[in-house]
Length: 132
Image (tube, rainbow, N blue to C red):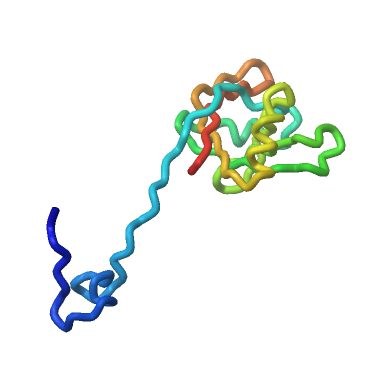
């Protein structure tokens, strides 16, 4: 076990400051935890999805937003690109647990794993992650 050595000047505050005088506090541990594979629902109802399709890339991060006042589904989770363009929703069959996590203050997001155009319907497969 090593002994704690006070820096020059001997102040306790000096122990948490780096050599340049900035705070040397530890950085919080962050990680992204994979939760589930699913798809994006409702892409055929998104205005301008044809133009947006060419911009979407596999691996792209998608943001999730809760819509508890959604008249069709109180557990609705809106899916958008990082630039704020709506892509669709987390499917109703999959969203109950994720909505509860988000309502509890947890940050969830998705990444595109596969993109396929089927006529005028865009199929987007995604992975859902919890950012902690």
